[in-house]
Image (cartoon, rainbow over all chains, first blue to last red; front, side, top):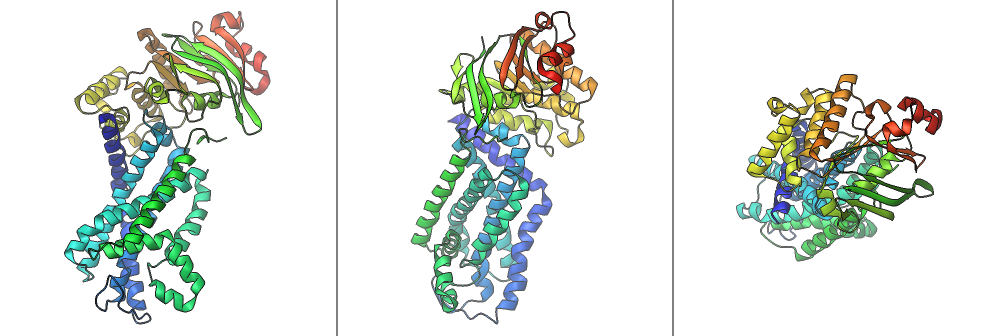
Length: 261
Length: 237
């Protein structure tokens, strides 16, 4: 058991050290959602009327509405970026090193996933603090209650990245997948507009948004930020995480051969 | 015997990469796996390190069947990959600590082993330097220190001198030869004949088939090893 703990700590710490050394990555991770919050949302505020829907008990500004979606966006980008580094690692040798450690492969992958998720959490809280400084704040207890929600959502999105990385052979192919995964996932969700608003323009789009796992991740975070549990979203995110993780473990199974010609 | 390969075959879809390969690498001996590019050396290393799964044949490491007990077998192996595995932005010590932890070593026992492995390679005073500041030779030495950290019984090296200058190449080759004196089993894959010493065990792999096996000086039979190698494999080397 001690071996597992030692290895878990080391893998997570290594992810953290790598992230802290890439200051541009941290900056980019913060600037992206802040631009959305402080520029896009300000412009959009007038165009979009929001009615009172749970968990909100009163009228809210558009900026307040998109904060959970932007937390989701941070986790989405972080999950994809970590898996991008996995494809790079595989072309280098560090993934080989990890996968030849005398521990079960699922555990090694899960440790790496957790390491990446911790970085996502760090980014989310940095973003929430800056948003708070601009007066876009949540109830204090919400920040604490959001932690498990962010963790679960981060693991789900990281597992998606991990699953994708196991099927992508080269870095070049990954850029395309980023566009086909990140943008549809983000825009076809409740991150930027409530689902009922989407239904007004198209039932089909509404249904797609409602099925999108990213929508559930965002709703989970949204409710948690107001210290409420959205049970359906929680179960959905949890199950999706298990599915993505299973695909990733299957993808990295040695019998499928991570080492291709 | 500390490394035994029996009747190993492997296909990449339609292409057969290894055909019925069997050999033993003896304890305390340097076994050179010689073959031109595309001979199947990297596939064999993939199978030995479980990056690929053995479908046909058996691999035993220190008496442990790799397929049945993969984790116990991996714990007995030290591996130097052709590709660099170290994080260039971390120090030598940080890299080695990470690897030690993957093998369940932490705290004092890890520190002691890190110091000992760096001492062996004359790199102790550079422990805190970042890998990025080091030349290719020192990076490779660090890879070797890493692979030896958990005191493996079998050391596998997949073309470990690729990209090194002549003096670094000789230094690493000689050093690994010396390690066998302590009872370490070494399997060294290469396509460069000057890395093989006359008393080394030699396995010649060509087009996925094991063509020759024996002691280098017996096999070459008065010829230079380079000429012998070319005569067995054509001009592909």
